Image (cartoon, rainbow, N blue to C red; front, top):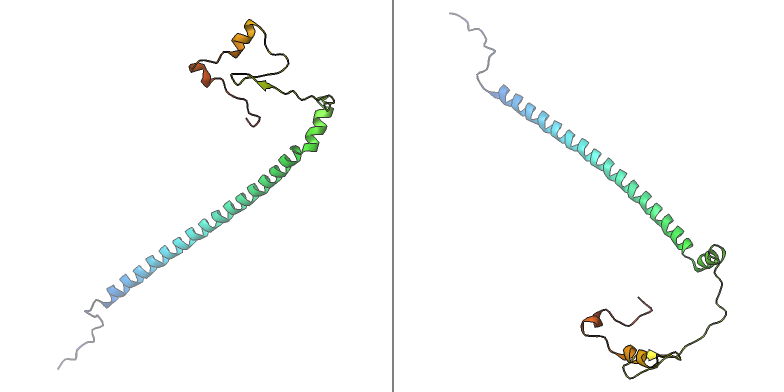
Length: 138
């Protein structure tokens, strides 16, 4: 009787399945690594943007301080006195105007004669939009 020779070849597909699983794990590991590298890149960009925002905020604060110093009343007064040769008003007068029958106000130099008639004439409907009262806040 003949002895059988040992057969080392297996007919099952376990080795192919193991290779496919190993290949899948390798691909997933590479994907996870690339996502981690991209996350680090985004974190670096975010830190860079935060530094830029902080530096711009510091510069804005410095500019606000410089503007406040330039707009101080004492600096404006000194500039007006030294550079523009302006002086404080010494003679100030108050003029009181009395209203006429049309609501216009005239002082001591009210128009006389024909000029008074023209001055007292009310503006037309269309021109009233161009004639308004002056306001100190405007």
